[in-house]
Image (cartoon, rainbow, N blue to C red; front, top):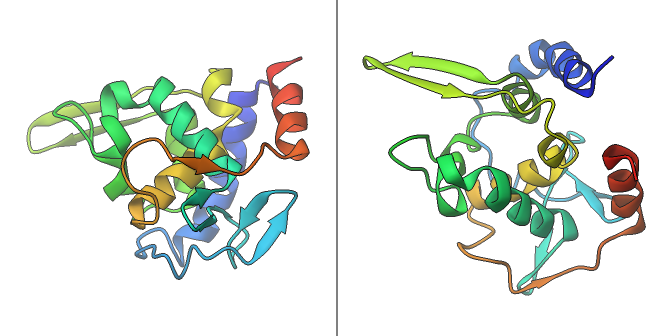
Length: 174
């Protein structure tokens, strides 16, 4: 089974449950507060990946998400998730979409037709440079949406945890 299919199945399995409570709920810095640390990966009270920013230092996953976003996403969605004439501002979108919805959209893509305009988000479920770092992208954009991460490259970040190194090696095939 391809990674894209596996991610899509997981996202679709979780989506109905999550959408009952939080798909349209506003995210906030309070909801995104890190309550659990799994080897340098922070989770909120619902078990979703989240950021931890203290004294101007971002966690590794937020920093990695910044790098990955500016590698693969900013061309359409603009610098720092601020949007463009071509694609929406993800710094705004992440205020109202939850983690399973984010996974589903990135893995499968999406087509929107509103106001006589058609926008197409391509599927990235087969792109290792994206799907191996989905949590990183989510965490970075969540921090931008909540106003916790300012525009631009984070000046300081935590060291890369061993768990991140192991996950990267496993996913990238190295």
